Image (cartoon, rainbow, N blue to C red):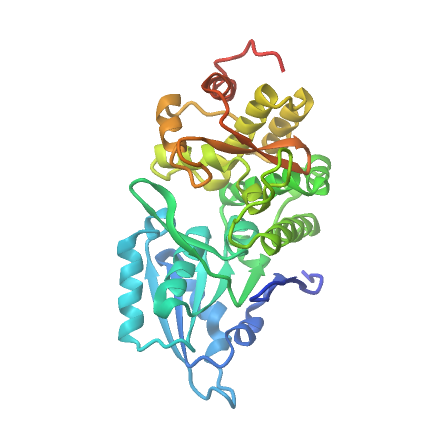
Length: 381
């Protein structure tokens, strides 16, 4: 099947780079890697079979690099990869290979691989070049763009990390063709989130197209990817290191807006031992903050319901009963957006108008959570 030519979305700022979106993009990789003599491919064990296909063009000699030394660093799948132990193993391997500041790390995998590989690149010699080749929808629209990297600790998710922008990102939609349907659906959690915080056209596309048509070859899915990536680009260029927007009431919260739904989502992920998919947790978290904004900030009832219908339409969960409120609240208190003992949530004043809700009452938090569990069926929406 023929596909439209690739799209190139440019990320400006102090360290500009391109995000290329299309099908069968491996030929773009050498240009992003440049003249590096050594390249380390960080990927999960389950994707080692893709390495030759994706990075094959890197092995072809050029006048500038007659021979390239390519090292494959394969490790655990998913969130298990995001540990200090796995990061240390990568550092040791880079040391053994004599990696210098002119060499390059390439990540091949989902969001966990991108987070780990980006952090390894950020911390080795205080920063070497990294190129991301995301293989999941979630990673394409979220983890691969924007320069956030990190690993997990016993205290929570992504609490150790650094900002390290990539030298390029290849969103090869052909890689999604073997992705399990559940993983593709999970990636739509971040896409729909972008619709609520910045781009209503995303919501229209989701609401007016048959979810069964959102497949890797679909022009609609490609447009959703392009729009979600553009939302992230626009936000991170304005606020790369999450310094925040204006503290004025009702002002745009800057990069924190991308964390819409993530405070509860991260708590759920930890409660579930990271067995729940990130996009699924984000879907639940977005419904939760819509319920919270309805009670604490007057978000109209129809927008709360629109959260349920939009996320639910693509097959994402919109309720959760897997953990106690008190346990989740304790985890949320160590969320990165918290300030001292005060919880802060990104909520909506309207579609495309994210704001900060600081210090909501426990009464409102509990009522919103009960609405998500379904135990508060009498709440008037």
